[in-house]
Length: 146
Image (cartoon, rainbow, N blue to C red; front, side, top):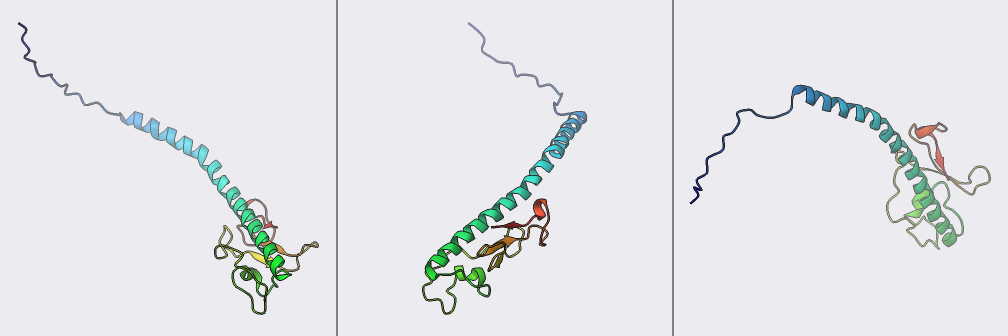
């Protein structure tokens, strides 16, 4: 017969873990990766704000076109884009609201600019002044318009 009594295993008193050098190497690698990826990621944020502004301006332009089809003209400058949400005084054929939600600010927290008549032969201008809030500019500070 076989003796099934088992002997308890002896545990080593040596505790395994990471050395300080190994931890420093890992931290250095993470730092290098973040230094490489970080600027590329944050440059995309500016591009995405420009794209959001263009999409919103396009959406407002379509809503303004629908307003014109119903009313026969674009809203005047005094009423502006609010005419897409609330019936202006004296407008009989208004069939809105033409936007599902309240007018948002541009991606930089500024109001969109509506101008009628528009420049360069356009019926209206709809624009955002970009990050700097001033006309002109390049990159993220560039104006976005219809």
